[in-house]
Image (cartoon, rainbow, N blue to C red; front, side, top):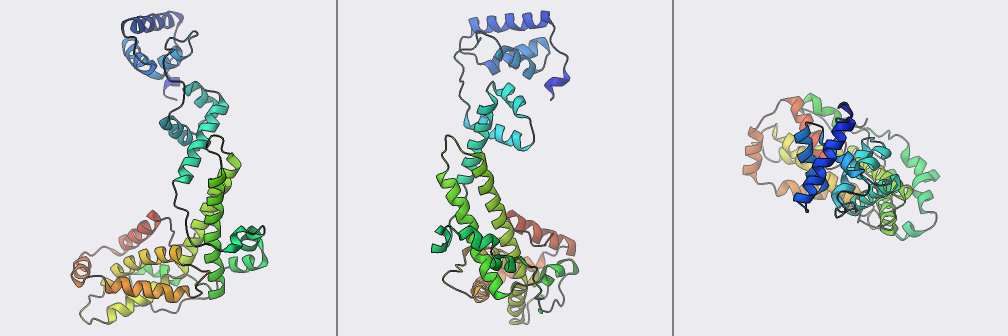
Length: 330
């Protein structure tokens, strides 16, 4: 785009640029296309990309020894540019490749990114059944679990800062629905992993990549929903922990909540709904161990660092977002 803002090269300028290029090749046989374009663009006071494209379009090529295979860095740049909406034809011109090669490079990098994700977790024999997707995504049982929750938390909010109170007033899930959603979470990750594993690296199908990414996004949204529904449990356990010590500063509960959120996010991922049916008990045990392991000295020091109420909320939301979880429903 920046290169396009410059006026086109005149015939005289084109001839001058090509003459300089021939001279550079004679004097420095190992010079690359990019290096030559950089030298010539400075001499002629023209855009680097303008000169680079001119040199790359010559037939026979001025730089026959230059690499024609796209590098991993090229794959990364192409995939990112396509996500930003850069037209394929522009990228084909920029890299000197066909539109098909550009699309294939972007797909290969998407597959590489997906394969770098850790999609392991608890599994069930049901996952390999032909009707597994229907059971977890479209069946009547799945539709029932998707209905908005109506169970409101009863944990007292007390002296909590006003901005963070809405976090702990979000509807909780019925135990049966929560169990089904935890199973669906692991099924979606399993389905994404299967798609990624069987996709050939040299020719990935864009449809398979789209479906795998969609499954991963669904699983992330599902984990966020499960985490939000269990935030009152974190508050309840944190409050019980502060009541055990009469000398505990009241505002320490905010730091306990932050640690509890981390534990809740990890618990929602690690819990195996196929061997246990009590996620709440599992979560409470993890929270109790986490709080018991927090040294009093650390708790006291953290408690002295007071933030304004809105910043407390922003920090809690940001820390969860870094772990792929939204603590507030849209």
